[in-house]
Image 1 (cartoon, rainbow, N blue to C red):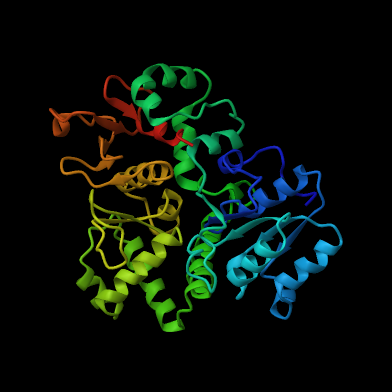
Image 2: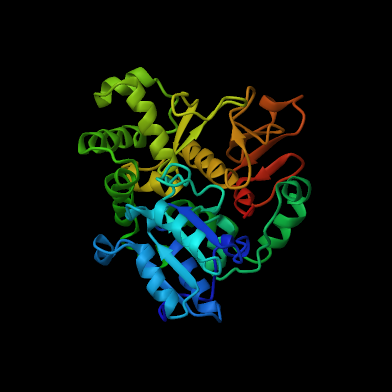
Length: 383
């Protein structure tokens, strides 16, 4: 724990109500969940302990029994990592929660864990949070620009000209934005910049081969199909899916493709864009498929990434954290069923969205905008 960086914290740290008795923090590998636990552990005055459920010790020992023994030693704060690796997670947490009312549990898991799907339904006991990848604002803080304000979408749309002017006086924003698109989605980039692309490929491999099979109990043939599907999509995103065509290329059924897409979205490998009003169901075909973040595009595209793909992927990735993003009848995206956004380069005009109320252009390669034309990079300041 002494090697944990305490000088900077992820956005979620300030949002968590730490006084709750059972907190579950979901998120993809590499987003900083373990660091979040260790930072909180160091900040408390009570007796606390960190336990990782991927330790071989828990292959032969029940967590409930271990916590009972530690409770007798006056431990009351428990920080438990990688809980999806532990078979009896839901049953043991229910037992602990019900039997020890003065214990506080903070738990991390894979982003695909469903707390109402274990042997014991924890949905009425646990407070659930999701830790997403870095925002552009967080990346700037890691690069030494910690005073960039977090904006609400309303503030951004109404005051973007003034805010952009203040930020542009401080730093070369477009240079930092370009770097973020290539390697800024995960906080470990600072330690692994030279091997960053390889690390991203390893993360996707571990998610598809370890995390998803552990939680969903799928066989190796399904894992191979998932890897094949991911490779096909990584060469074609953004992809307007023909599910039957995908099924034929992968060699599985249509229903299997929809199931795999659902799993990979919940595991933060893909982003699935749907129409307004369309139900979020495993069997519902998405309208468009993206990789989860722009860093994945650089790691898996095999060449120079398509700029339009980078722009749309960034916008969706940053907005989905606090907003509902769907397809638009007239443009690229609809946000919160209210705002229409067209994504493009610096020469993008508003011809396509003329006459549409609350319609905006998110334009790349510009430091500042005017009227309804807003710099794309500013949409990375929302969390």
